[in-house]
Length: 296
Image (cartoon, rainbow, N blue to C red; front, side):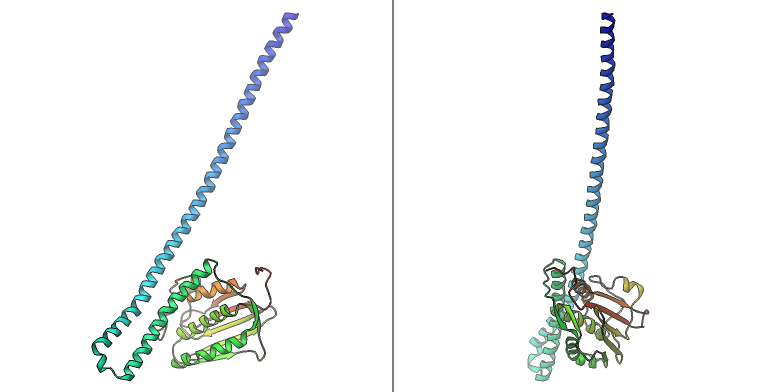
């Protein structure tokens, strides 16, 4: 009986050992499988991140190429014209009258202003995107600033026989935003309306004091916007179907700057148009009081 019990115990231990070994092997297999799954998932995540970064780099490269193309074209033309003007002065300077010289200087000044605006717009976009733009929020009268800006643009509008029709409240219209950035937004929208309007048209500027926001509308009777235009309206370096009507210059950055500034001040901006040659209306809404998302 003792020998039988001993043999039974040995056989049982062998069986249990085999079962335990199989369990350990199965557990090791499951561990290895899960580990490979985790490694594969990590690989997939890293691959997706690399794909995303690659797309981002391609987009940055595309923007860089567009910028170089724009800068080359928009800076080369006025620089060439300035060089030709200077060479003309050198060759025929003694025969130029005082009035002709004055007109030439005014023309040169305009060329230089155009080039300076290109550089300023590029720097503005870079400052906004790099987070280096400092906004100083405060409450101020938007109506007063808009009236002053429209006064400054009367001469430019008159040169194209355009009529600035402003509908403004009689009382102050307070907004909570950065005054300089807001003025830049107003300047872009009004100057664009003048730039892209044919002669002898109207430009309507409306300021509406709402409950929580102030709404600005700039409506022109110009070339309008196609569906394609509306899709890329606020993108950098966008070239829309409309063209300046008086030989004015356009960098393709103005509306992109407007969009970024409005977003930074917790406002909204968009445009509506019934199509080509049916004019367009640009609408900006800014808050009247501090917004919760504003950084301290």
